[in-house]
Length: 174
Image (cartoon, rainbow, N blue to C red; front, side, top):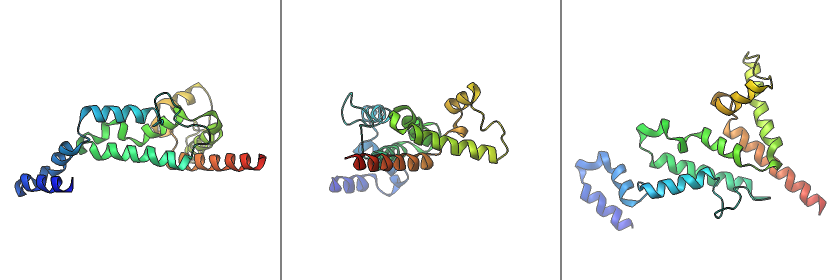
């Protein structure tokens, strides 16, 4: 494959250097519609190991799972043309957060709530007195307002801590 990449560089020549990224991408994959749609569908399902399998099996290795989801998101960022990136849903960090919130098993509910509370507290400290009220309007904001969504890094930390605590308890019971 390295020889073919070199051949493509030579065939494009100096005049085509500006468009080399798109040329290589289309030539060596990722630019194909079928691959993009299949990967996107798997990503939105949380990258299950097989069709119909849960995205987060019991006692899955959370750091490894989150790393895989991050890597897939980074792939979408790499393949998306720069001018389309702001509107490409699969490349958004908010989409990754939504995937987690939709697919995490019940055992992570406390971690999710912990991450949401950080957002609420941050809003309260910023002077938004509605930031901590739990009501139907707050639920709608949680579902539709990205500014009220948990930060990915905070959610990731809460999930990993939750998994480690659960594993510690599981081993202590053995």
